[in-house]
Length: 373
Image 1 (cartoon, one colour):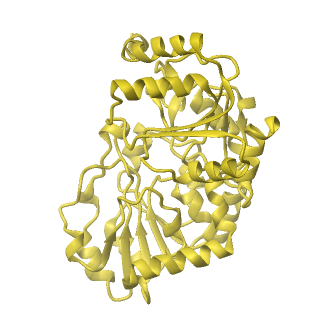
Image 2 (cartoon, rainbow, N blue to C red):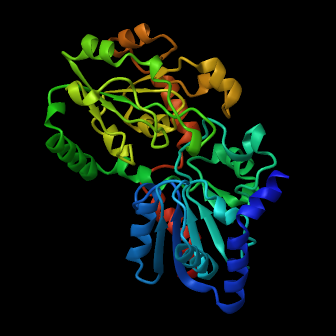
Image 3 (cartoon, rainbow, N blue to C red):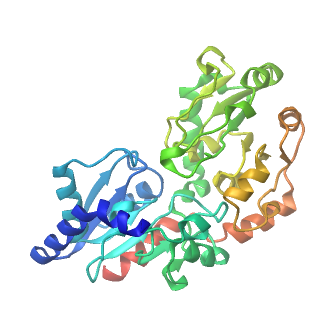
C-alpha cells in the first residue's frame, strides 16, 4: 500500500518520462547532476563536474534544490523529466525520490555519488522501516571508500554488489593536496581572524529524526554558556550543525565571541583543515577527519536510544578512535585532556578509507565515463 501511494504521488513524472522516451533519443554525451539537498555545486558533485568539464566532450546540465520541501513547478517538472529521459549519465549525491518511480530507459547510467564516506549509521534498505519503500534500487552504479564496505552499500541501496565500486570518494582528494591545505587555511584565517592563536573546536553532530523533513537536535544536551566559560581562554568553537537540522538552541551565539556558527556552510571538509578538536557523535565526518589524525571526542548522550532506532553497520567500538562520553561535564574535561588511539585509527582508516588516495575523482570519471571516451 505504501508503494502504491508513492507511485500515485509520482504519476506525473512517470507519464512525462514515458512521453519523452517515445519522442526523444538518449544523448550519449549528456550528463545530468541532480540533488534535493544542495543548491550549489559542492562536495563530490563539484569534483566530478570539474573533471568531466576538463574533457571538453560532454554536455552538462545541473538541476539542484536545497530541500525536499522545495517543490518543482510545472515548467520545472517538464525540464527535469526531459533531462532525465535524454541524459546518458545521471549523477545523484543523496536520496532523490522522483527518480525511483521511473523505469529508466535502456542505456541510462544512474550513478549514486553518496555524500557520506564509510559505513556508519544504517541507511536505505539496511533500516527495517524501509523494507517496503520505493527508494534507491535502480542505480546502475555507486562508489565507496573501501573494498571492505561494498556489501554494506549493496544492502543499503538494494543493488547487487557488482554495481558497488571501491573507487574512493572524490571530495577527499583535497586531503592529499598540500597546496590546497595551505590556501584554505589562509583563506579561513583571513575570513575569521578571531581563530588565529586559538585552539579550534569543531562541534558537528548529526541530526536526529527520520530524515530531512523531521530532522532535529536536542540542544538540552549541550550547555553553550558553560562550555564557553570553561574553555574560552585557550579555545574557540565553530558550530556546524547538520544541514537538515532546522531547530535552534536557546542561546544566542552571535553575542558570544567564543562561537562561530557556520551551520549554513554546506560543506564541512574545509573546516577540518583548521580544526584541533572535533566533537561529534554518529556523523560520517569521522571518516574525513581520520585523515588529519587529530583529537576527536564522541559525545553521545542518547547512545542507547539512537542505537535502537537507527543502529550501525558495525559495532560502535569499531568507529571510535577517540574517547566516548555521554556526560557533558566529562566532555569539557576531555577537550582539555584526551588523545586519539593511534593504533585504532590506523586500523579504522585501513578498513573504511583505503580507496581514498588523492586520485579518486579521476578514477570515478574514468570508470563511469572513460570507457566511452
